[in-house]
Structures are given as structure tokens and as C-alpha cells.
Picture 1 (tube, rainbow, N blue to C red):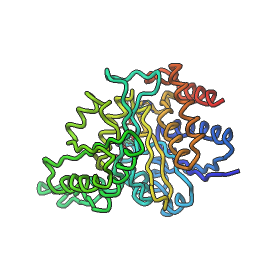
Picture 2 (cartoon, protein in one colour; picture 1 turned 120 degrees about the vertical axis):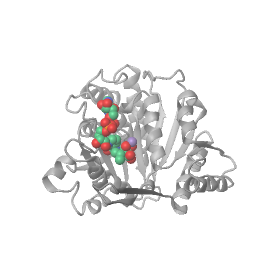
Picture 3 (cartoon, rainbow, N blue to C red; picture 1 turned 45 degrees about the vertical axis):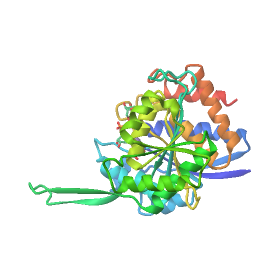
Picture 4 (tube, helix red, strand yellow; picture 1 turned 180 degrees about the vertical axis):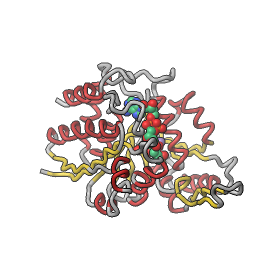
Amino acid sequence: MKTYKIALLPGDGIGRDVTEAAKAVLEKAAARNGFSLATTSYPWSCDYYLENGSMMPGNGIEILRSFDAILLGAVGWPRKVPDSVSLHGLLLPIRKAFVQYANIRPHRLLPGVQGPLRSENFDILCIRENTEGEYSGAGGRVHQGTDSEVAVETSIFTLKGVERILRFGFEQARARRGKLASVTKSNAQRYSMVFWDEITQRLSQDYPDVEVTSYHIDAMAARMVMAPESLDVVVASNLFGDILTDLGAAIQGGLGFAASANINPDRSAPSMFEPVHGSAPDIANLGIANPIAAIWSGAMMLQHLGEAAAAGKVMAAIEATTARGIGASPGRDKTEAITASVLSALD
Ligand code: NAD
Ligand code: IPM
Ligand code: MN
């Protein structure tokens, strides 16, 4: 029987609840589809940091490299560890080290879920650049604590980085409804964003079957609310993609439904699957986190591993659950009840 090695990083807060739920569903789906998951869970988190002085061991990346995929809950507990420390000690280095340059985030309404918009027929795939841009980490502070203090944080856009994410976007659009929206702010940022727009134009010649449109990020934010059905694949830089995908989560009914995959398309290192949401300290330990985003992310993991049939069954089980109203309204059902419903829908 085929066995996939999966690293579990539950992390902090509700990350722990939702990874446990996803693990149970994925293990059952595997057993029903003739493969198995060998999972190893690592306690790397803010609690781990308080005990050990780092978010993961020095060889953490090497440990993770031997896995077929990583399933992550959420990282961050700002009351104990500054976010700038915790996220730069665990989540962000993994995305960079494993060249997970494509962060894929689907936004559509699950059956039975009431979104905040009049429009219900949207199906958007956001593709966020995941290794550079505004998150490059190039910068510094000088004269700290004096009135001459300076802070610099520079976005870095490379030809290689922009080209590969745009090509990825074109390929996804080609495999879907043939429409690509490229998002920049080239009216204000005249170097990096004009560079991005030029590469979009150049690559479009290789994809005559894809209808590509460039939008400014501000106009895109409005379009996602006013006319989301006009969009198919949306590709954006790291920070723009981050912000647009919380907006995407909102229009699909909330962060409890927004899934994501950090993909290394070359498969030279493991890819990582995680919900879009964070550790939600406001509802941690209440047992009411919606696990659907994490379970959907798990389905994306099965798809990436080549287990499309099992991935389809997990999606069908999620949809059967929300169609019955379970997990469909934020805060109403317990994590355990939603998970139990997805598990039984797998039968
Ligand atoms: P958040 O996503 O944790 O929470 C935002 C709001 O959405 C909260 O009201 C929360 O209760 C709600 N929410 C989120 N997920 C939910 C779910 N599954 N079910 C029901 N409600 C849900 O964002 P935040 O409050 O800005 O961040 C909290 C911490 O998480 C911070 O430390 C932040 O840096 C971190 N964070 C981590 C990740 C990640 O690890 N991928 C992502 C985002 C934020
Ligand atoms: C996300 C998160 C992270 C990001 C944070 C926690 C650093 O918001 O995955 O969307 O900005 O990438
Ligand atoms: Mn985010």
C-alpha cells in the first residue's frame, strides 16, 4: 500500500484544533482509497519558543525536507511572542526554503453557506507570489530609540520570481475558464509594478488562449465585492495576495472556509497546506473553530500528492456537511460536530 509521509505542524491556538480535524478526515479518506498517511507531529509553536528560544530546532528545515508534504494549522500568539518573531521563525522560512512560490487560494461559496454578497456565483482562484516581493525581508532600522530613527523595508521583485508566478497563473487560467487577472499598483509604484505589468504583457504572447487583464489593486478590491463573478484566476504579489485573500475569505462566508496551498511546482521540496486563517486567539480553547478551511486545505494536499479521487471525496464530504447547514454559519457549530459530520459523509 502506498504511504505518504506527512509532517503536521499544528502550531498555536485554533491551529491545533483544525489540524486534528483535518488529520482525522484525511486518514479516513486515505484508508477508503487504498493508501495511508504516516504522520509525524512537531510541537513547533510559540510555546515551543518560550521553552527553547526558537520556533523550531536549528535543523527544522532539514527535518521537514524528508516529508512528502506538510500540513500546518496556524502560527502566532502575539501576547506571548511578537508576530515578527514567531512568523519569521517558522511559517515564512518554510515557504522560502522549500521554494513554495505559488500560494493558491480558492474562493467560492460552499453549498448552504450564506455569503455577505448578492452575487453567489463566483469561483475565484487567487494565486499569490509566496517567496519575495514585499516579504523579501530586505531592510533594517538604524538610530533606534532616537529622534533620528529610520526604518527601511524594500520590496524585491526578480525577473525569475515574477516570471514563474505569472506563468503559473497563465497555466492555471488555461486549465480553468481561460481568464487571468494580474494585479499591481503600477500607477503609483513605477519600478517593480511596471516591471510586473511588462512581464505579464510579454508572457501573454505565449498564452493566446488566455484572456489577460491588468488591474490595480484598489480597483480589484472593489471588483471582488461588486462583480466577483467576472473573475477567474487572479495573480498578485505576496502582500497584495495576502490582503486580497482575506477579502476572498470574507466573500466566501468567512475565514473558516478559506483554504490554501503553498506549492513548490518543481517538486524539488515538500509543499505545505494550511488554512488562510491564523491562530484566532479570541476563540482559542472554545472548541468552535471551523475546521473546514483546514480540511479543504488537506484535500488540496491529497490532490497535490496525486490522490485526486480521495481529494474529490473529501470535497464532496465537506459540501454534504455545509449543504445540511452544519458548519455553514460562523460560530454556531462545535469543531467536533463539524468534523464528525465530514467523517460520516465520507461513508
Ligand atoms: P485570524 O485569522 O487568526 O483571526 C481573524 C478573525 O477570524 C478572528 O475573529 C477569528 O476568531 C476568526 N477566525 C479565524 N479562523 C477561524 C475559524 N477557523 N473559525 C472561526 N473563526 C475564525 O487573524 P488575526 O487575529 O489577525 O491573527 C491571530 C494570530 O494568527 C496572529 O499571531 C497572526 O500573526 C497569526 N496568523 C497566522 C497565520 C498562519 O499561520 N498562516 C495566518 C494569519 C494570521
Ligand atoms: C497568511 C498569513 C501570513 C502571511 C502571516 C501570518 C505572516 O497572513 O498566510 O495569509 O502574511 O503570509
Ligand atoms: Mn494572511
